[in-house]
Length: 299
Image 1 (cartoon, rainbow, N blue to C red):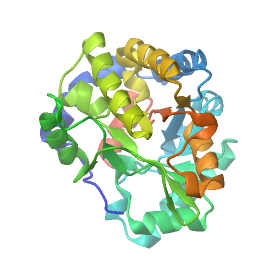
Image 2 (cartoon, one colour):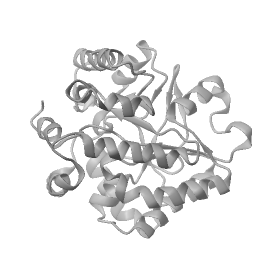
Image 3 (cartoon, rainbow, N blue to C red):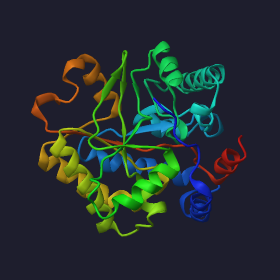
């Protein structure tokens, strides 16, 4: 597994900074509301969203554990740092600190997603040694290359995450660890990179990603950060309704991993003859303006 880039480019950072006051407040209440909204929407289709959280925010804002406990929490590092850039000992130290923090707040730690989607073979080894069931740091660009948005979106994806694989996304085994790739373009590329703010246009792109995944019989792991949820709420609701019509298996990443681990020889055949699988995820690396400021300076 190769590590991705650890940044979004100067332009991406400036654009995101300009939107911060809309997405975060001085307290965590705005983001806590977004998490509850995400849980309420997905519950209409009996889906539990997976939220990889940077553990340090739990100590800063312990109340956020209540929202995470109602979801499928996963570790997103202890600090928001690119794992692929760290020596093995530093990766292990950060990972163990995150596990201890999750345990202190009564949260399970079955899954992992690397900050910046930047992981390495060393990261996967450390996860296996600690009996994690899944990693979701790998990326897969699932929007067809013939799509009118693909050329620009691929360039943006490579700026953010390094070289990305293209085509259908499928789970695969890394020893006894399930690798569940994140689908691209994600919300950062669509909303911040491409500047798409229209709900119907976002819905159309997500549906084209889902159609391609359904045709391939693959796995669609949507990435929608909680702070952007108001922008994606309506499009996501329509996509989940369409997924139900298609007969997709909509599940958390922990549920997908459990099935894959029990059926390693059937990693591309879904339970009960579902044609594809879909998961809703959203990384939580900051819940207030102060958290984001600390993250920028490496705190």
